[in-house]
Amino acid sequence: MTPGVDVDVLVTGDRAIVALNGDIDISTAAEVRERLVGLIARGVRHLLVNLEQTAYIDAMGVDVLLRAFKLLSAHGGTFSMACPHDHLAKVFRVSALSSALAVYPSLQEASVHFSQG
Image 1 (cartoon, rainbow, N blue to C red):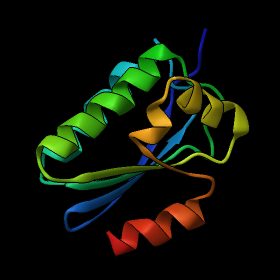
Image 2: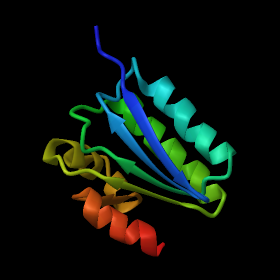
Image 3: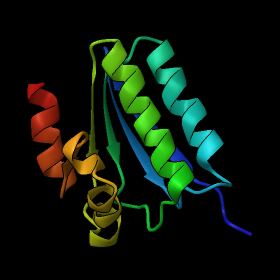
Image 4: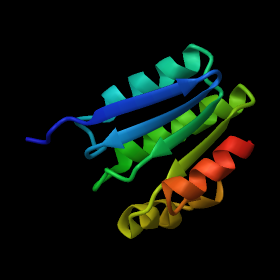
C-alpha cells in the first residue's frame, strides 16, 4: 500500500508554491490533480511545484503535472518545478518534457526565476 502525499501550499496573490511530499503515482495523482486544478480555478496563474520531498513519480504523476502546465498556459500563466533528484529529473528529460516545462535543480534556483516571472 502506497502512503498518501502531503500537499503543502503557499499562495501569494496569483502565485502559489506547492510542495509535494511523497510519491506521485496512480494512488495519489487524483489528489494532486484536484489541488493543482483547484488553485488554478481560484485564480493562481503562476505555479511552482517543489519536488524536493518526492522520491518517485509514475506516468500518472507526470500526466498531472503536464495537465497543470497546459491549463496554466491556456490562462497565460507559468509553471515551474524544483526537481533536485536526478532520477526524477531524468523522467522529465527522457520524456522530452524538460524542454517544455521549466525544471530547476533546486528550490532556491526555481524561486529566483519564479519571483522574476
